[in-house]
Structure formats: C-alpha cells, structure tokens
Image 1 (cartoon, rainbow, N blue to C red):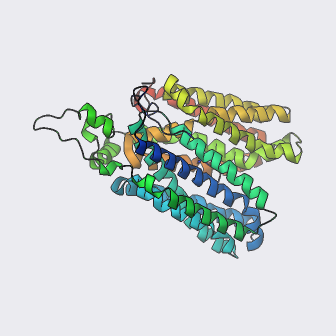
Image 2 (cartoon, helix red, strand yellow):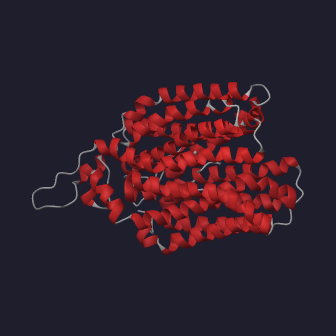
Length: 442
C-alpha cells in the first residue's frame, strides 16, 4: 500500500474561500501551526515508507509464503479503512488536533511491532493496529488542514501532500541505506523513537491552534439569520452556509442532508488517483522488466520517477489552484494523467514509458489533495473521512485489479485501466464543477 493514500500548506481557493488580502502575513500562531502540520504530514510518509522498505526482511523473519504475506499486508488496508469514519466522528466531536496528536504517537509506536512477530497471523494482527493508526492519521491531518485553509484563505492543501511525498521519499532512501547495516527490528525501533520525539517536539504548536469545535457559533440576533460579521469570518472559519458556521452539529446535518452526493463524487475522484498510485507502486517495475526488457536499475526507477513527479506537481499546486481554480486543475490534471498513462503503458521503449510515468505523476499530483480538501470544506471531518475511505479503496483495488486483468489479458492492457480512471476523474470533475467544485479561483 503506497502513499496516498504524505513545504507549503492547505486549500482555500481549492475549497472556494477567498484569498487573504496580499501583503497581510498570517498570525504567528498560524505559521507555527502550519509548520507543525507540515511536519506531521512528512512524518506520516516517513514512517510508512520506513515500514515498506523492511517488508522483505519481515517476510523472511516470519517465514510467510507470498500468499500468506499478501493476506497479512491486507491488515494495513483493512485497519485504515475501518478506522477512517470513526476518526471523522472523533474529529467532529473533539477537534482534529488532539486526534492528530494521538495518531502521531500511535503510528510510530506501532511501526515497531511488525519485526517482533514470528508468524503471518501475528503479523497481520499487528498490521491492523498499524493500519488503524495510519488511516486515523490521514483523516485527522486532512481535517486539520481544512481548518487551517479556512484561516489562511489560500489553496495550500497540495503542499501538505507534497510534504507527505517528500517524507516517503526520505524514509525509503534512509531505509535502503541502513538495510544492510541494521536489522529490521533495530531500524523500526529507532524509527519509532524518532517519530515519538518529533511528535513531542511539535505538540505545543499543534494544540495552540483553535480547532473547529473550539470556535463559538455566530450569535444570530432574534429574527436575524444573517452571516457572521466580517471580523468573525476572518478570525474563525468562513463557510458557504452561514447557518453552519462554526457549529459542528449544523455541519454534521449538512453532511447528511445537503452535501453527501458531492462528497461521494469527490471521493470517486480521489479513488481514481489512488488507483493509479497503487497500480504503479506494485506493477510499474514488472511492466518495464517483462514488457520492455528493462534492466533492474531502470525498472526500479519506474515508481521513483512517478513519485518524484507527484511531489513536484504538489509543490506547484497552490499556485495552480489560485490561478486556474480547482475545477480546471482537476480536469486538466486528470486529462494529463490519462495521456501520460497511455504513453507509459503503450510505449515501445523504456525511456518513453518513464516519460509517460512522469506525465502521469504531474497530472494526478493535485487531484487527491484537492478532492479531499473540498470534501472537508463541504462536510467537515465527516466529509474528509468519507472521501478518504473511498480514495483509499482505490489503493486496495488498484494492485488487485491489475493482477487479475494481467492474467486475463496482458499487463499492458491492465495498465490502461489507470488511464481510463484518470479520464473518469477529469470528466467527473468537469461535469460536477458547479455543484462539487467552485469553477474558478476566488
């Protein structure tokens, strides 16, 4: 299970909020919170990648067969998906920051458990815990980012996901460097200690930012249901629906009655991107090796160039959303991802296929962050949880679907489904732009 599912920060233009007036710097507490949240996004990717690179060592230690290992690894996905909706409810009730902090400690602690197991069954059970922490962390981080977006009034969600991607790249690189020097147990225990230390250092700036549930609802005068005054909207969280401003109960009603369909649409868009990430993580190297005769080095570079392109695309995501608006970025990104994957799957040479992977990564880079951010803007933590659950379902679906299709047809044909779903994301974003997405930048 790769990222997704990992600098700059959250999404207001991408969620339809007006931008902060130019020349007005954010409050120091907002800057500290933004830094802390970025660190937690990076820590999420760093810890997950550290586990991924030690899977071969843990497999050897447990003596699991490939099929038994596959079932055990499903524990990560099952734990994550099972926890996401619960995390959304916890964020709605207690605020996102305490949940981020709890998962910020639980995630690194749980990563030390897999190398302590000696059977596939035990591995699967501890991976349920790890997956629950990972899924909870993902929802809580995105919910907190949506809150910050409303305060900053800037579309910076792609930058947070760039931090996740960078953390994952660093974690994988470090894991590769120490793989021959440290046992999996020592490596992951040290990783756990580092993660707990980072979470402890950034606890204070994380908790000093007022959560959604800390902000009082606007006091409407008798017979007056007008929106909050401008100074309240600036200090708190602006909302498209004044009746729900700052009121978690009202926001939950909105999620159930008014915005469930748009949130599901956004979850579908996120799923299309996550499907590509899961498919390329598990099958890109095999495609380059078996279909194009690539040497081990270039074959290993397949997913690396895709992930690097996604990181670069997310670093530029804020500027793109501010200038073009989220609907156009989603539509163009899905179209570019579709074209890139057509090239990657059908290219006759390794280098053309790698170029296709780069285009795919650049195109799909900002689709998941924008979709999750907009879902959170519409439905609060519950919207983030619902869209994330659908999105992470794509990570589960991608590798499995590619495997079956490769058996029935060919791997080239199977990879074309990535292009097809990217096209679905683009068409869905464009056709629902007036309901699910603001069509232009604000």
